[in-house]
Amino acid sequence: VMAAFAVNCASGSITEFDLPRIKVASGTALWLIPGLEGDTTAGAVEGVVVSARDTRVYYASKDAGNVPPDCSSMDSKIGVGKPGGECGGCPLAQWESALDGGAGQACKQVKQLFMLRGTSMLPEVVSLPPTSLKAIRQFFLKLATQGIQYYQCILRIELEKAQSAAGKPYGKAVLKYVRKLSPDEIARAEEVRSFVDSFSTRVTPTASE
Image (cartoon, helix red, strand yellow):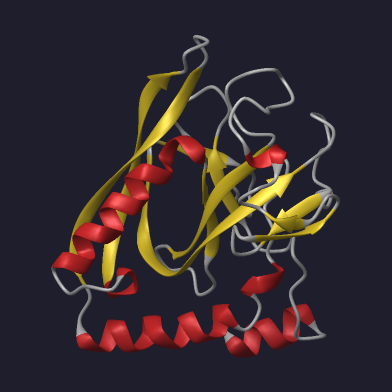
């Protein structure tokens, strides 16, 4: 993967919008998965999460598209852009600040999971929306009680149908433990984890996540 990365990417660097992104298809309980032959949908994704982080993203316009956000945070603590600053006290991070007038936040919380799936040698970014943050937090805590770090196992993320208070349908993540990796698999996951950490600080959420 390192050789292919060096040849195909030429400069050896990845910009923030280059990695394939798997996200919940709007208004459904299906994952939208990009591929060489176009996008496909699936009710679940399965693989090894080699890295994970909490992020925030704010767009001043509801129809911003796939462009850099007005403000974003790579650690969900300090925002960079406009308005920038500490996320905790920002009015855009408060509930009921959503641009559509709903109960959500104008500055969304997004959990980014860098997942190795199947035969892929480079992780894909699986983006979990605010409605699924509690599920991933509880799942990671359960792993911790068993002494398992999240990159040491294969997990499956299914989507179940749910409905917001406003009656809008969406997909809510349900995480399931598949199995623990072998020592050789863990060693490889650690190598990929180090590789991901070398560029993941440049992978920001997008408007559609």
